[in-house]
Length: 385
Image (cartoon, rainbow, N blue to C red; front, side, top):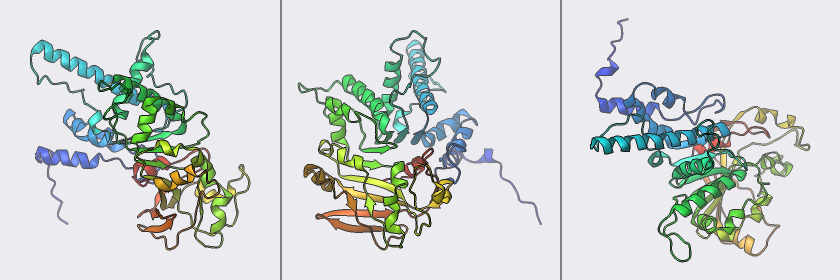
């Protein structure tokens, strides 16, 4: 066998090299491994170390969809934003002193135009101030950190938050609202100082006062600007005996919508078009039903990980607002769909409104248990809308 001739990578045109870098840097959101054991950003982070040119080529791929599932991730992201602000100031000072608009700064890279989606799992009183970045007695540290984070949150079109993260969102909205200059006598901005149109909520929904920011003009304006509201999952949806009962005989599953949906101020979402909620597509029959919160052995295969298609149940906002307005509390149930197949969308009509169920083209390898969830994978893959 003749040896295979090799073409030196360095002899390729720069344009082709950059395209290769961008392709290789795409996050592996569809990987079988859990994100906490293998970062989907590993290829891009490695390529950033190749050269300054490679870093600039791959950063847009790295920043397109930002996942911040832990407090440390959030702090590190805020630190990066603050560092970029410092690099920008250094560049501006060099330009001012040297009189050259093209003064280079290899470290500076403007994040905001490249972040399109962001997932933040924040606690109620999340400390977003990076460690050792500010002096210990620097009072406005949180305000400065919030301002940096707001530069991203105010520009992305899709935001995913834990329920407790609404407090952090409220702080950013307040900053954006006060920073705006186009304000009329009624304290309203035209247009609003943010671009978010899709809001995704996930995790436990028992946070007290979760809609408190509605009492502010910026909170009310924010919800009014949302056109798509989505929900990832809640553990008591997945491990709920009502969830599985209709599937025991192989018949289509009915969807018991979570009780917190009855408390959402639907009328405040003035421009809302759809609400969607994701479920794992689990096939019957189940031999052991879940009856005790401490006993998950009946779903041990699912708990340790499995490959499942994702179901997306999409409801029109008009239907939910109608339920809310009429105080209907017993009809928050969607009857099962027949003929559900991968890549297909099933439709049924409820009160003259179109309700749909879509099954993903491909299965997703993920876990779901009370302690850990991989629903950010479903979100990152775009299977939530």
